[in-house]
Image 1 (tube, rainbow, N blue to C red):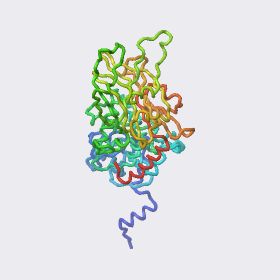
Image 2: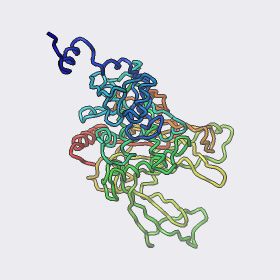
Image 3: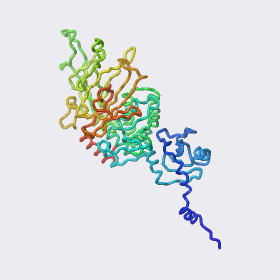
Image 4: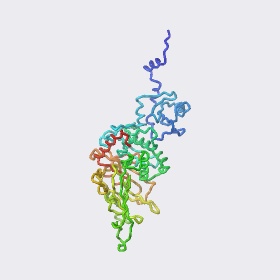
Amino acid sequence: MTTLRTPMARGSASSKHEPRASDLYLDTINRALLDFDFEKVCSVSTSNINTYGCLVCGKYFQGRGRSSYAYAHSIHDDHHVFINLETAKVYVLPDGYHVSDPSLEDISFVLNPTFTPASISGLSSPTHLLKPSYDLNNRPYIPGYIGLNNIKRNDHMNVIIHSLLHVPPLRDHLLLSNFRGKEPELLKRFATLAKKIWNPRLFKSQVSPHEFLQEVNRASGGKFRLEKQGDPVEFLGWLLNHLHKEMGGSRKKNSSKIYSTFQGELRMETQQVIVRPDATGNEKPKFDIDREIKSAVSPFLFLAIDLPPPPLFQDAVEKNIIPQVSIYSVLAKYNGVSTQESAGQLRRYKCQRLPPYIILHYKRFTNNVFVEEKNPTIVTFPLRGVDFREYLDAPPSHPPTAYDLIANVTHESVAGTTRDKENTTWKIHLRAGGGGGDGEKWFQIQDLIVEETRKEMIFLGESVLQVGAPPFSVENTLTVTHTCTSDMGTP
């Protein structure tokens, strides 16, 4: 008597002795060729709709139906395992099987890294340095302190990306985000880039910002391009304001994570300059309390610091001496007493409210009729405890006014006072593991080159941007508070 097997019985019997059809091709996956950093568009049609990545060669193709490019690729090149770049589901083509296998989880995590409040709680602490990760080649790296690919001339944007993604409130907000709806594209791509930079399970210990910078090019109308060297300060201003808008921010204080992290308030007093008949030729104009003084308070996202002009003439002995100045002498611009004269107006400044994290911009470049000049003056600064109390007009109840350095962007080019954009390189120093002592390290990152550096070497470069954070104990409190409130939907 012949026994007929149902398809279900046949499947269950064969599954005990033979591998499933969908598992036959999993050994063809080549993780070394997988790179999810580039824009997710089909390599044939350049469409970004319903895109799949081939897990054998790493190329992107559209669709998985019989008339799709992915289907044709599976037949012509004998590559059968594909991942949906949006949902991270894996399929075997041309059969169309959906594959659910634990061995594929690492690929899904590289494509879409996810973080929890517990996993990000120690990113700024010394314990983060004690847990290095390893890439496919077994090379150690520290998540967050990895190289960014300089695709053409985008190193000025790379240093800004690192600067912002090492500010704990903004970093944690992006790492805990789950953008799946109609959020603005630039914000989604910046959050994706943040997750890749801090990913502890990378296949390669470097990340390409290509996908994010392509959107920057589109959103800025071509102002910031991969192939064009630019000004990191200009890019920072544009990016902060654009992210503020895309986070739903308004003109109100603390209306976005950008404003609640970086925005302070500055008072500017102005008065018309009047030359007195009894004034001598060398006397500087001063504020006259008997005449009208106009006062206005305006918000700021970073403070511009003027550098003293370098000496015009140097003798033979001083020819190779680079001028130096203390950070406290250039911050005197904001003490409410120092005056500046411009276009017949006297101005003086004083801070009314300091942000939790402060950004300083040293104005090194000025335009004249002929060339763009560079000021090579070196600014000396302590790494810890720069107190802004003298530059603040606020009650004693104001939060702590001292800042520790966490990021320092420097400019390098040929010697001299003329800016040479073609031979310019941008580097950044990043603090890892706050708290001081042996648990704290500093890294210098230039594109793909990541090197540990000595603290004494940091102030030797021509600093252009610096990010200051509250002292480590206060910073930890701010980060923990943010982590706890992120689950309640705070912006």
